[in-house]
Image (cartoon, rainbow, N blue to C red; front, side, top):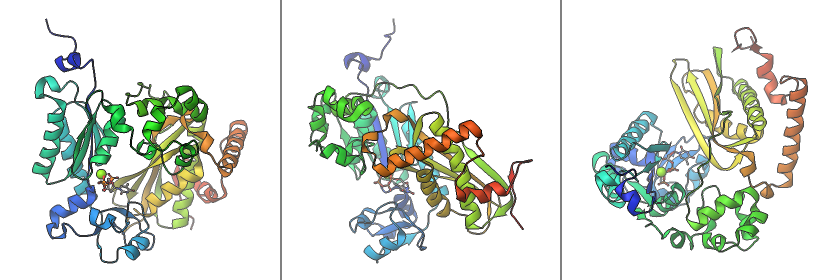
Length: 413
Ligand code: TTP
Ligand code: MG
């Protein structure tokens, strides 16, 4: 009779083997396939315009302090000799798909997390292909040999530990955390290695004297619960190297995309901004009504020739505040505006949703709290008197110019 669980799962007490893979300096690595003479040099991908930002850069440029999201003008100042290249999204998408298809050779359970990052569950693959660490090695090598691209990966019992291991393995490395060794592996690492802990929340750990992940693992769960509220359980599990509890996906999907097709292609930055603000307000209201926050904002842009692109930005601190969502969306839109035509369609959506309760509200500043009050007041008015009763001043233009009959937007003459 066939065993109900795989041989490896039986032997290892159902221990999961999850691989997290992230490509090294992905956009640069793809560009170097076309321009191998630039290997080893400081290369920056992004627009050199005054409003441009760095998409990514080579490790040689990182030595000068250049990083993703840095304003281009600053990058030009600190790394004046760098070679600048424009983004070639069709090429990045092409190679991204190839990377995920190599991962799918070994498991059907592949979860792309971004253009160059994904997770694959190798637990069940071991009966067919042998130990997970050998499979992980093969995947990284096949990506290098077949595509000519460097990847780094982590293998562990959970996605979180595997992601931390992959980050440490960079560049072009593989770190395997063997079953039972997770806690010891994580203990010496600084707290900011935990995904979701960023600049905003870090002082909240330091003030209690927690510096390393091990400091959290040796704390009593009761004290952590008092200090970090609903976040404590997941922090403690991560620190102990235990897989997260499966969490049901939210029943409501406030992340449905929210978009406008214009009757005339629009170019005026103020009109674009105003429309974006209107879309963000709708989305923010829906998020707050569902008691949700998001960690990724995606914008959709279509030009006059129906060429459509989507661009996303993920951030550390989950939010449902319009002004933060707007700022991120605005940067994404204005760094990706069509060069030769106006906008035909503009859309915004959010991903990486969490229930609001998971947000570490104790790290909120008093300004954040004031904003919280403002939004809840605005939402109450909308609930009581209708969604169109209050909106931010800058969305006014978009509202004035909206044609209610066909839901299209008309440029004023
Ligand atoms: P990352 O994996 O964050 O960065 P990377 O692959 O360039 O470098 P690393 O070796 O540290 O993983 O992002 C993947 C690609 O996404 C990156 O090559 C460019 C793009 N990107 C942006 O366009 N903007 C951003 O702010 C970030 C973080 C990435
Ligand atoms: Mg990467």
